Length: 294
Ligand code: C5P
Image: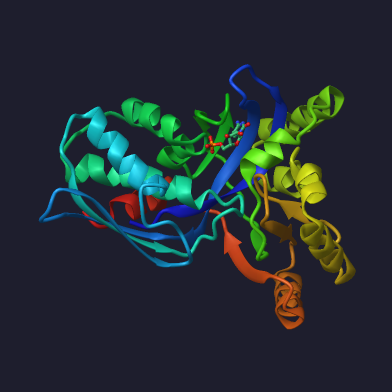
């Protein structure tokens, strides 16, 4: 299975709720940057997680491990599974890699263990793992509300190629939300703008608005990220956007030549890892990727 990363096409955050979470209005789309996940029956009891690629915990702290554990408990099954996870999606970047791995693990084990749990039941388990996880059971593009777990799949697609800019900076999502100040007027204006483009099915139009309530608070928490944004502006990228709570940034252009020129310049200056990515076009691709190994 190839769990994909996501990008927030827009992200509007309301004030804190009683449970400490924040209500969101976010449009997310899966992109063609993947981890690899393989699930196999193990010959000894337990959940055995083997990680390669980028750094990630190969133990019970891993969200994929937690997904397997929670699903097994939910169906009262004694697990005996080997999980091989190859990480390409950097952690702490706002790309949802861990959530995507967890969602793929739920989908994969639902098949491997012949559970046949319906989508709604998987979504309930997913929402206990993290706010982003239910989105990855759906994809490729959805409007997510509540704390992120209420999913409305969208038929619209983003066509633009994106230059993803991956800095070596890890930001704690919880810290970003803790420092966020809700500005009702700004949020209302952002929602109005987001709805304008959503009503027209114009996700490319929405994307270039760069609506993300968390950008400035994340910047205020990381001088390194502020400096990176300045460097990118200096090299002619006027609009630098952020995904989720950061730290990954992205830039959009209609010109592929411009995207490639930016990519080369970022590489030359060695200030972050640039990567050209695009959004998924078809539902089928998302499903095939999740079911490819079975
Ligand atoms: O749900 P998840 O574990 O991904 O959230 C990580 C942290 O981000 C939460 O502990 C919470 O502090 C914050 N968060 C939030 N509102 C959301 C999603 C996340 O405050 N809708």
